[in-house]
Length: 410
Image (cartoon, rainbow, N blue to C red; front, top):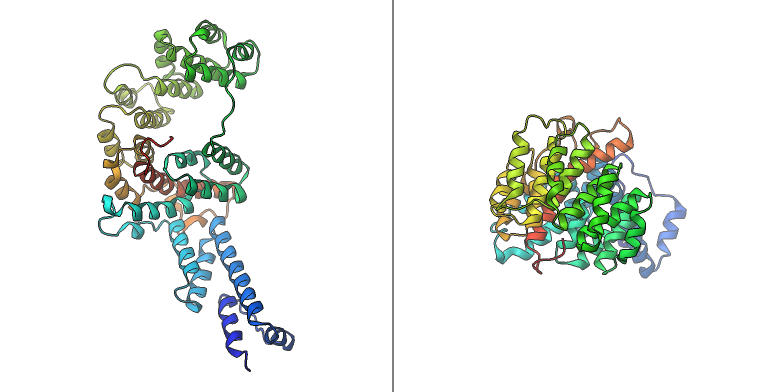
């Protein structure tokens, strides 16, 4: 038949994986294919190909990597070198954790290959975002807002409710949108009310804006608040306004029998570590050695590491680089190095990303993200997100420390 070559090409594009091949030999279907014009046939091929790509991407997103891998290999065998399928294969490898080969290129950490390194890290970040919206704010510091918005836009379209909310909020921040600050009178009204969440927001505005007119009000709230979040927020406001009397109370709260109080106190101390060359590095050591702090210690140390990156402390690069090699602290250290923004961390971060720390669940898995197949979807998704997190954190850290515009938004 004159259109035999076109028919064969269509079969190449829309062929199905082994075991599911359907014999498309009915007279009606052949006639329908023969009457297609070249333009219509080309359109049909493109549509079918896009359906295949969408299905593969969906399987990767869902964590069904075995099926996705078989499909990719089948279609690549039929269409060797196809750029879209090669790209999908790369995304599949990243989801499986095989990021090392992407970073083996010689000299990738040198300034001369900065563009290539960033391309690799954007790919890793894009393939590792699912289920980790708490890490996405780092995209704002990558120095490439268009690419950041592209990834966030995809997450907003196909993610869970929390993913969509986070993506939309961050896109708004990239566009320069932010809530209008409250006036002093409005803050006073909120603090006189009973809405704890609103009071926390108002106190944080006092803290961030250093509104000295409201020092007395913040002290009153700190002395009378029964809600631990409100009390901690008031302490943060007072420290920002130069009132150091609350610091001993916060340090004592680190040993509280109520974990929430210890964590809230640490969050305030991280924002206001006090005087000295490296107050948070010193506090990290004290917490680590304090036998009175038990169950909540890992969280407190994690918060301290984050603060060391944000605070630009003396010796921070050396301290965080060392922690990058310790499995317990590696992910936190990578995140903090990203915030620190020192290009000297590039080689250490590349080494980390080649072999990110294993998640706690790794011993139970034999094949990528599908390792909790028998359990509920929520647990499976959470475990999959945790397995992706080290890669995402490492890629975002490298993008931040190599950002074209230094001092990009954190």
